Image (cartoon, rainbow, N blue to C red; front, side, top):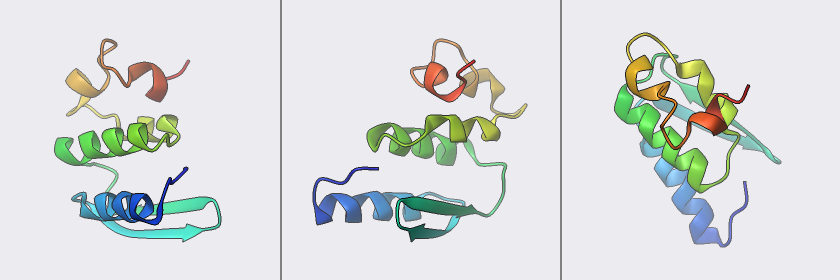
Length: 89
């Protein structure tokens, strides 16, 4: 991820830590580990992660692991702006 100022970096981490279900964030060099309470994220949390990853150019394919029956109707929708980035074939 690229930050354009210290405030931009602070905004990223503040946003990430504010997402329900995110329990910890650990950065080491260019690697970032996001610890979650569960692999089953609430829709609002998954939508926030989608937006955050898109805004900060994260690896959107990492979000594919959160697809499940309860969010399939909207998360897997081929017309969603994130679909091609998350579910690259």
